[in-house]
Image (tube, rainbow, N blue to C red; front, side, top):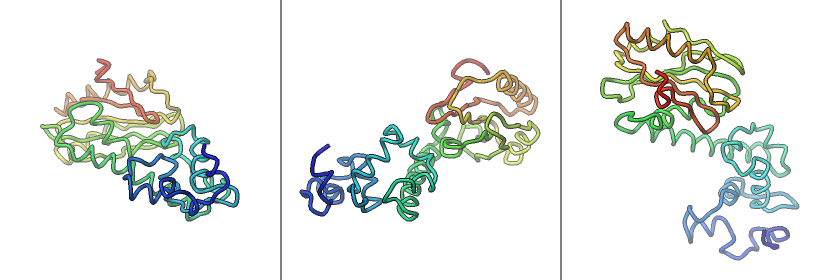
Length: 232
């Protein structure tokens, strides 16, 4: 860490060290995560510049933006220099990034892989502290018709009603569906209940001529695919 970051306000830094000036002269990709957050918050506190404060917040989250995105407004306000307005700015920016990721995935012409499905579902289920069950409904060409939440539960489980799942699919004439639920713990291994439910839903879909083409378990920033593992 450069010495001037500890003792000199941003306005007195060399132009190349100022986040906004660096953005203008070198472009957004030249900025570190801490510098981008510093632009959001604008100022630090009496002992830290905006960049140093931002760097400390990131270090608290193991320099992981996914972990940072899980912080509540109250969590952020524990850092001296982060008030309501600055905290909301950080949370809003991270939420926009998450929604953009989902929008890009939904804009694709068709779901061709488990990764495509994960990217489309990511924004809905990541960062949750409880389980939710979702279904992605697709047409015959595997283009996304709708993504719908079926149920939500506690930290360790949720109930997925087959009648509700297939009613939603039948209502919009979906040909294929992808099931999805999250594991807040980050543990991706399917439980025995997950496996039994998947087999039940696959069999129900076969009877209704609606194919279950995958079931994803999402935990933090990773996923498990029943299809990829040959478990459908």
